[in-house]
Image 1 (cartoon, rainbow, N blue to C red):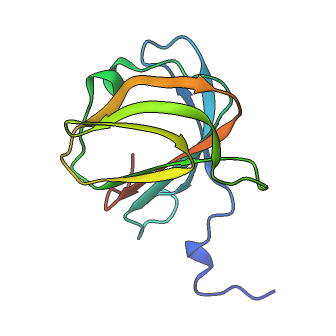
Image 2 (cartoon, rainbow, N blue to C red):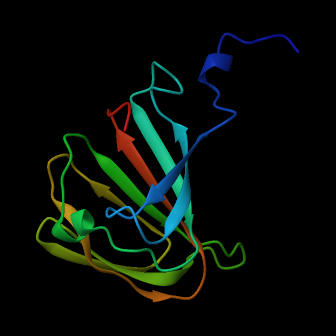
Length: 141
């Protein structure tokens, strides 16, 4: 097969990163970075996902809240193809000064400089699901 001029934009091998609690202890998970300017130098979009297989250890930074100088989209994606809206968990977080609780497959857009984080985090966990972050106009993590 001949090489296309667009092959340089196709990421066939995502970066695998271990996500550890902020204190360096506790539960870890394997995250996959599928797009970044490290993988595709022209990209200004960063996409990472990982399977949430159990209730994650809460990072104090997420509880306190944080903001970024770029827009972000966070997706929680259920893993049941027969019932794609079923997340299998309930997540208690906040965006700005508003509490956001979700128990369905969902996505939330967070504009740059808006504080966001977790209030209680995963308050119910029944089934593994995917958490994905899309960071716009960011480049590298």
